[in-house]
Structures are given as C-alpha cells and as structure tokens.
Image (cartoon, rainbow, N blue to C red):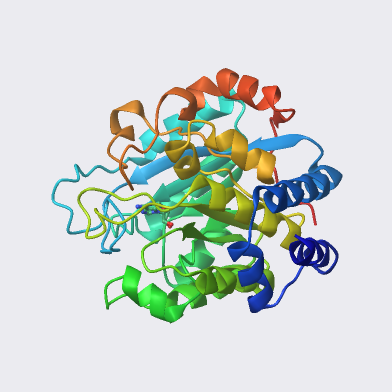
Amino acid sequence: MNKLLSLIEKLETEHSLSLDEYVCLIENRTEESAQLLREKADKVRREIYGNTVFIRGLIEISNFCKNDCLYCGIRRSNKNCDRYRLTKEEILECCDEGYGLGFRTFVMQGGEDAFYSDELLCGIVSRIKEKYPDCAVTLSLGERSEESYRKLYEAGADRYLLRHETADSGHYAKLHPEKMSFETRMNCLKTLKKIGFQTGCGFMVGSPYQTTEMIAKDLKFIEEFKPDMCGIGPFVPHKDTPFANEKGGSAELTCYLLSIIRLIHPAVLLPSTTALGTIDGNGREKGILAGANVVMPNLSPTSVRKKYELYNNKLSDGNESAQSKANLAKRIESIGYRIVTDRGDIKK
Ligand code: 5AD
C-alpha cells in the first residue's frame, strides 16, 4: 500500500504519472487504494463544483451508421437492428420537453448517418439555440470533415463528444474494420478542439484485447489532450456483433479510472455513463461517488429508445429517462449530491 499511497499522492499534486506508474496503480489496486482515490477525487471535485451534478438531455437522433465497429450494436452489418432517424421537428419536440424538465444542455447523438447533411444539422442547431439561448448544444455524431465541424460550430453548437475508443493504434485496429483509422479519429479530436468546441474524448473499459498498458496510454492521452469532457464506461457485449461472446468490463475498474481521471484534470466534466448504470444497479451512484459529475438521461422519443441499442440490455427507461428526473434527483440526493438546472460548462 505504501507504493500505491505515494503514487496517489503524486497524482494528486502533479496531475500526472508515467505509463509504468499508471500500470502499477491499476494492477495493484485494492479496496483501500480505491477508497483513497475516491476520497481525493471527491475532495477536488467539491472544491470546484461543490456537490452539484449536471444533467444533459440525450437525444439519440439516428441509429443508421456507415461504420462497422466490431463492438457496437448499431454497426452497419447488424441486420437485426431496426433503423430509425428523427426529423428536425421530432428533435425540437424532445428539446421542448427537456427544457420543461429543467435540462439546459441537449446532446444530439447518432450513428454516422449521411442523411444528416451539414445544412440539415446546422438548421436544427441554430433553431435550438434561437429557441433556447440559455442552453448548450452538444453533438456526438462521429467523424466529419473539418469544414463540417466548422459549420456546426458557427451554427451555434457548443460541445462535441467523440470518444477516441483507445489510445493504442494496434488496439484501435482490433476494434474497428480496416477502413477506419486511428489517425483520422485523433485528427478529428484535434480539429474539434482547434475550432473551439468544448471537446470530449473517452474509451471503453474492458474492451476486447485491452491490456493495462493500453489503459495507461488512454490516461496519458487524456493527460496531454486535456479534454473538457471524458466519457468512460464498461464495454458491454452485444449479441449481434463479432464480440458477442467476449467478456464485459467491470464497474469496479470503471469507477477506479473515474477517480484517476478526476485527479488528472480536476475540472473535467465526467459523466457517470449509462453503460455503468446498465451493468450495476447502483452504477450511476457509484460513478458519482468516484468523481463523476454529469449524468445524461435519455430524452429520445419513447418509441425509438429500445432501438438505439449499442449493447445488450442498455437502459433507456425507468431511472434512465429524462421523464424520471425527480426520481433521479432523489437518488442523487441520497448520496449527498444535487442536480442543478444549469448549462454546466467546464469551470476553467
Ligand atoms: N459497450 C459499451 N460501450 C459501447 N459503445 C459502443 N458500443 C458499446 C458497447 N458494446 C460506446 C462507444 C461509443 C459510444 C457512443 O458508445 O464508446 O463511442
């Protein structure tokens, strides 16, 4: 424990460890080191954000996707996926409902679907911003050209989420078809940041072929890239993918990594993800206790919710739905935090 203790103290003061040190901190973890990390992560988060938790209304606009990521349930070759896309009007209705419920950030997420031209998306973004100038718009629509990202930014989009998935190029190649490139993904992230988006990266915990050394690389990448947001969640197998029979990631390691990321970047916006809530009944709460300060309930129309199935048993109703905000608020209060009606920008 002495070795771990000094690594945790170093991380707390320097916000950085070497790759070997990250590996050591992860491989030798104990309930004791997890507890210490949680306490330190919670302390720095409270110094910046108090006990507030930000909420985002997640609108899953389309499950059409041109990509064929080996882990993902909405991959192009999944013939069992019942495809849908939302119209501008439907998306705006979600925002109307979300605004009434107290959401001040709308996240439009979807597969890479060419149906959503720059023109269509920019029209949707600018309409949301016009109607709700006090709200932030976050996009999570995959890889697009620099020109496209620029247009979306100029139309008023504030933030963009694009998980890097893994910071190891060899690992990236094992999770994605040959057509997709690690370099392109990393370049998109740099471009988004350069344009001025509050930018989010992230990765799956326990994805097939992932080693501790790879996780250390993810942490080093996060350290250096300095994202405003960072989405991490356990890998959860989906039955209609090549990874159907692979093992899923654990809530325990996900929470451990949430604490580490909080200490790397004390002000980062860190969601307690749906995947974490899916594999563990108390996952959302455990994520917040470990250092997460964002939750993203589902605001998609109920008729399509089950269709956006990235992995098996993905939660979409009950406590995951925006409509159950009161219930969610109660659960969050029961662990000592509170949901606020706020855009929830990063405190710099
Ligand atoms: N398990 C967990 N997360 C997944 N994602 C996609 N498929 C899965 C899965 N099977 C995550 C990816 C993607 C985000 C939208 O969802 O990291 O970036």
